[in-house]
Length: 237
Image 1 (cartoon, rainbow, N blue to C red):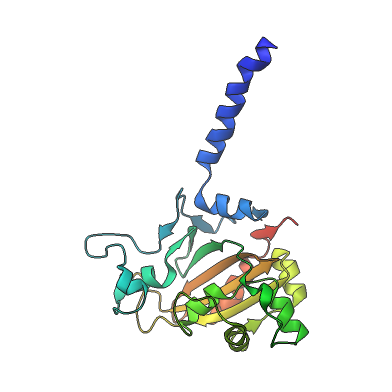
Image 2 (spheres, rainbow, N blue to C red; image 1 turned 30 degrees about the horizontal axis):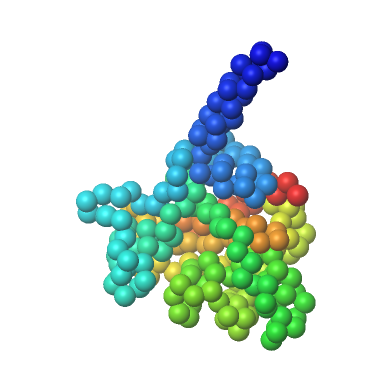
């Protein structure tokens, strides 16, 4: 009994150490029961907490509240910090032609009341698997910082590229997989990347977002980059 009591603090320490050692990406994905299998051609940031996509400096400080609410125009690197906020991880292709921001959101089931207006079964299936708040934010649609109404979600639905259920299952074991373009309004990330595509994979409101940031040239190979991520993130259940 005494030996067991002496060993307990050791197990507790090891458990706490494991939690401390986890990166923000690992914590976010593990919380949604998602496996991570990063390929060798990707370099991943190892931040413990969420990070801004552009380095915070004196010239590029933390975004102001007015900038976050859209009442103050932003440019350059600050634009991207306002657009994306903080993310779990930044993945960079070793050929430097594509950068991927990974973001996990809390499973807020704000779409539970949808179905009062929309009756289409395919739309309702999507609404029951992914929230539309982040998508609304990315499109800068409607009133900021308000959860999308059912009509807004229906309108946003029509703006998305809907990938097949089979592809969602094959790639991420997800129920829903959608993508859409990102408008950077002429701003350039790291003086190189001009184009963006968002990919959302969801299953019962457990959702992760992959933001592919590309050049004018590499955006033409978006499908290749997306296929590179098959089973990189994979829902365990």
